Length: 378
Ligand SMILES: Nc1ncnc2c1ncn2[C@@H]1O[C@H](COP(=O)(O)OP(=O)(O)O)[C@@H](O)[C@H]1O
Ligand SMILES: [Mg+2]
Image 1 (cartoon, rainbow, N blue to C red):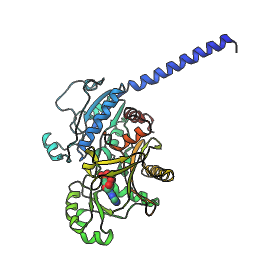
Image 2: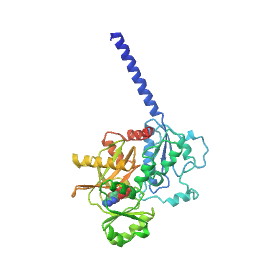
Image 3: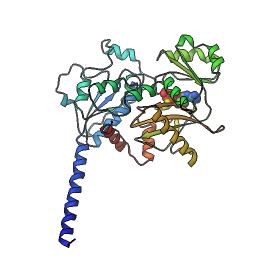
Image 4: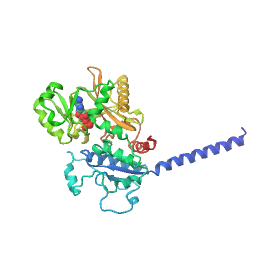
């Protein structure tokens, strides 16, 4: 190649590179994103915190963002849909999670007793966006219902599809599938509260055990039972949330969680609550739980846990991102599946963002990647 041709080719290639890069940047910067928060879920407050931090990160990344509560929607406002999208980082969104779980009946009463869980203009706002980022946790947000509804409108959204959500959100179904694949998960029973008795627990499960509603998150309704007199109160607590209750053997060991982004496991986190177990308060009040990331498991056990979590992720039909909770019973060298989360917490004390940071992915980049993932949904 002559010098002239070489220089020309170099200039053309370099220019093409710059144009391609600019087009890519513009494509991503120009995304219009609706972030859904709240909803009628026991995890309403946690979701508001997650969603607002996500919205702030996406605004910092240059996206145009509309933040809306799945249940509240936009009431008594006929402004054009475009006016609910904003740009820029002045006045970031804020939210502090109260110590106790929200009173959903009070929320419903404040909205004139309306029980439809999709608020006014929510679908319209989602249709106006390139992508809907689900900052939701629990109930309709995580059990596949909002995913199926968005599918029906051909709207792109983040996280697992409706089937993966429905399976992973049901602790009974997910344990059955995981156990069916030969993976350890503690012995359990699932039934309506009337059929869960002390006698049955003693006979079929034993004490200590853990009682939980089958389809909640954030430890809502979960009790660790260490004596017979705790069964009654635990049952009252769990049945407040749902009519199907799961009781399983308590597993003694190190609690770990594996965050998954795309097809990869992020660094594993060990969770050590300073008191009691990893309940609602220990999850969301800063300073009450120590997270060790990367968990000190050694190279071989780290790989075993990561491979196991990825396998479970696939068995449960999960996609894009999520988290798998496991207890490592070191004495018997066994990893026990506890449950999987398809829209894991994205607050500043949450585990997936922390694991991403250890993998060199900043919070803003993580949110950006999650928002863009829906472009590749099949
Ligand atoms: N079988 C079990 N053995 C020991 N601890 C458990 C068991 N199941 C749950 N836990 C404890 O309860 C917490 C919440 O239970 P989990 O099933 O993960 O519910 P959630 O979906 O609300 O996070 C866990 O993080 C763990 O600390
Ligand atoms: Mg959990």
